[in-house]
Image (cartoon, rainbow, N blue to C red; front, side, top):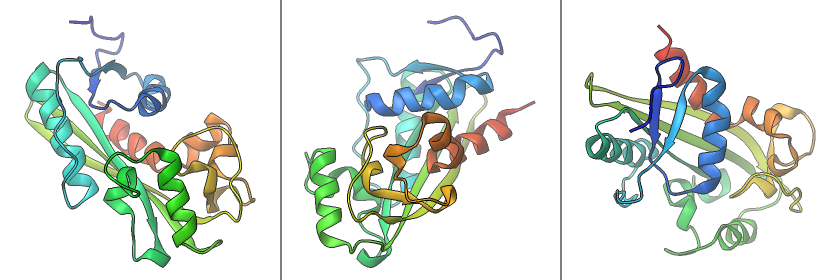
Amino acid sequence: MSEPSSSGRVVVLATRNAHKVVEMKRLLEPAGLAVEPLPDEIELPPEDGTTFADNALVKAQTAAAETGRPSIADDSGVEATALGGAPGVRSARFAGPSATDEQNLEKLVLEAPADSRLRYVCALAYVNPETGDERVFFGDCRGRLARVRAGSNGFGYDPVFIPDATGDNRTMAELTDAEKDAISHRGHAVRALTRWLRP
């Protein structure tokens, strides 16, 4: 078991997504929250909930129960207005149960028109087994579908998501880490969590 951080705040991050681990550490550590990876032996439940909050909460609950430590988990995805809000909670498996990021992105580009409205959504669950606290925080980022993919940063649908907040035509994958964190759905959700955690 790790020693507490200097701020006394350590959270277990309930994910197997290496990209999310990097992004969450980048977002949380400046706020005084040290991030611990999920122990290898813990099996996360399937993401079969009907909402982002359902999926995030069950993962955080599982990690907290197994480790006895405060735990966080997110579920996030993209909603396309032209597709009635799809892929939504199925964003990671839009093109099939074992689809790659590339396959999911290709399916979105094929099915949704260029310049149509998109919204990134993040539900971030916090579960503390020591206090009984269970909370879900939300963030979103609105934008549109790019005509052509661009950029090599980010992951998932980032190469075709042009956020409104930047006021230009760059995709999420063309932004610096700092630019992305300032406007992203995950950035907004993390800031809501850290505001709530502040003494």
